Length: 180
Image (tube, rainbow, N blue to C red; front, side, top):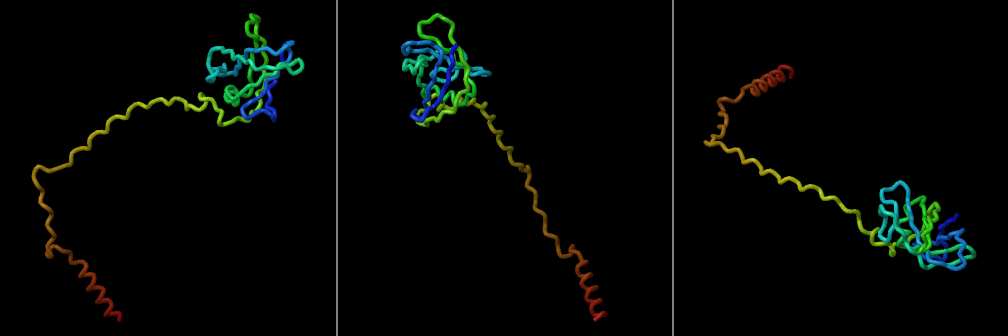
């Protein structure tokens, strides 16, 4: 049974961390193949370009022994994608081995990332579905025009004006003179 731990040490550049694998029983550092699997996703396996559906093994050649533990660096090509994962399953096998891979689960630590080392797959925005083309606007209706011209209304003649304003004014003046 193996145990895997991940940590970013102060000497690690931004975007890098170290995996420490215990329980392999190696006497010399050897390359390893790992898969990274997140739970509950349609595309659970990590590849060089991001997450995909099929299991994918990543090869790590830069390994070293620290006592009985195998230590290997994990760089921005993986840490950018792993930065939003809480718990990860890691499968391990030695290249050329036909044995069943070893598996371990771990809580992925927070890694300080380097914005300049962001993988291209992370930079590209998700594809945008094209909206159906908008229907062509309808032409405006033609203006309403009468077949024969309509004569404008004539101004009312002074004869047809109301006499009420004059009547009210006379009553007000008469009342004012009687009261005054």
